[in-house]
Length: 257
Image (cartoon, rainbow, N blue to C red; front, top):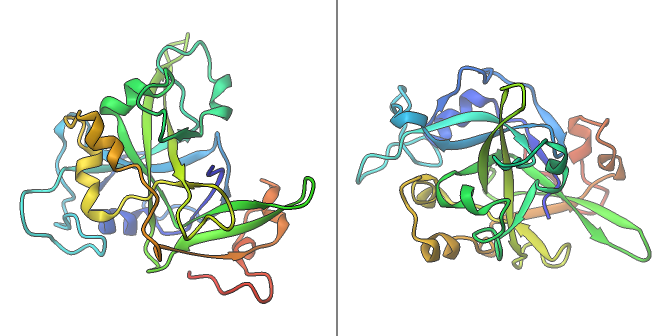
């Protein structure tokens, strides 16, 4: 599972990296967050609504902000989402504390996700995520995972729009997980699906509907994509939120920040 994420890269830089516009409600500078839990607000990248325009700065698709050759990239937008997907048919938001992750093996068929899987796909943006290694009894040891190249993570997910009884809209999301690959399997048996830059257009495009092709993208990241180190158990308390949460326990490695 993936139950806590970190995001300290300013939204303006994320927009340049991913060749995207910022939605009006996204602050250009943003506030660094080091312990974001489910039901909190996260930043997600999706195809521009209503066929919007691409990033006016001219950056178009490379993970480092450089223009790429080939067809014009899919216009993209960074927006705020509530982490914990609320299906359009839900009576209320109470179930969203259990829908912050969706399993790749059932995401195309499970009622909570299957409609969003067809045409409402996104990536949740993060600089890192935490995972806990089971130990003896109820003991669990937290670790932080980051990309080995220092770039932000693009975690495959889905989004949904829900309308309350009072007519108030809510956009929410979930992160898709799959079997852990070599970078994670010694810590946890599940891993978030991490999208590489060249796969983003295919995943985000709402007109792509081939289930087999989409499901084939939901695989563990290649070996060497992630690095990790042990961190303090203070990360288990959502009231704790600061860069010290990412500091390595002595002898467990050094963070990439």
